[in-house]
Image 1 (cartoon, helix red, strand yellow):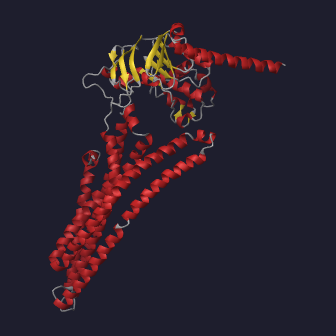
Image 2: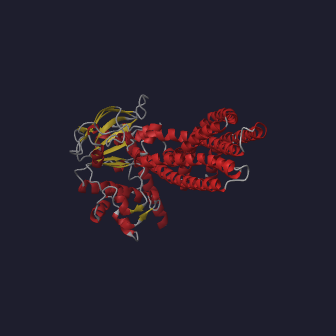
Image 3: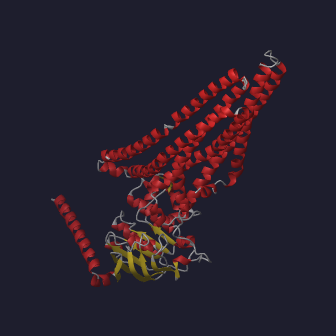
Length: 595
């Protein structure tokens, strides 16, 4: 895990190396200072039989000033390079995770929730960044200071230094016990953070539905429940971590009392210790105990960040299910012909639960194919296999006479335009959204695509026309307008295959008919696959696929299916009956109005 994370250091290696070096310089100066203080007291202040020696005081005082300045400069430089290295490491880590996510297939994305990925890119990376900065500075400074201070203490007086040997194991055992209890709690907390973020995201994006159904109280209860669980976990973790401070204080003050008492005896009774040496030992004692406290803080930070690091590595370790061929991927799609050969598909590998089974169809380039079926019949799944948003579990899908797995993914998807069931517009102008289809599109090309999608008319009614700003997720346009803009965006690619996944459901039947007519006349060479719930949207297609339970039950023209397909005929008759009822109601209202 550490090896994988350190790959994100890259251009910040120099700063990561310099930071510990600066810390070592600071430590050396801080270790020398007590020795200078010993000379200052013993030889300067108490020298010459208690009369003092001004020359020694001046020399030692000057040396102390120099050491303090060097220590200050080294500490400042270490803090600066440490911050630079940590921020750069976090930037690269986010970049690596984001790039990895961009290459995920739909099945990889299904494995992680959107809220979880956002948490990993933000909160988790920040925790790892803080831990990295602390490791570069404190994790280097504290143990070196600890070792140097212990060495100097033993050189001054072995008996007094044994106090540290007794204190350190007590502190170490306490820290290990704290870490053992706290780490599982933090793992659980971050998973609950994902749940909380997911709930907040759903609530905010679906605010109109929440208010329409007056479910604010229900959403507040859900939020309180999840937030309360996080509160309880963090409270338990913080209570456990709170033992760290009194444990440190007990060890620190206990050590100080022991050194002061034993040291005073050595000075007054045995006369084997000088006042300056006792002062140095007390200073080293403070350094040792303070750096033990710093080490405990590092352990706490590492414990907290370990769970975040593991979650980050889960994303970095995730391999996309869909990759380019290893050797010479095909870079050009010949035409829009499509063939499914003995295709089976399951969302979870090895589950045995097939969403699609025994799919065998051939579609000629330029054909218009309608697809109908009940909810859960895997209509969307079928078309998502064509641009390799998912890969087949068994069998093969051919586009332009070649297996889709032989193509360069980018080349294949450039040739296939998909308007998914859930239409998504991004914040920016209408032009910005259309340019997702073609970055260097001219105004004329945008207008032509919008005319085909029957979007040009309502766009020109906006005061700013094509420069009208679209809010996030297109919240300032209607559902039908959003669908037509998404269709226009897909047409900007000039695709060989156009897939409309129930993309005219919010459009009135007259506009729907105009869109289909424009497709027939303006893009006859493009293969068009139209998923629809309305028979009227597909009945004039060249052929129609009828799906039921993940299997193709019938495939033919409208007239053929009316004779051979009970499912198709039932749907047609039920919709016609509903249409007639609407017409009768409208006629009745009109008659009542005349009377």
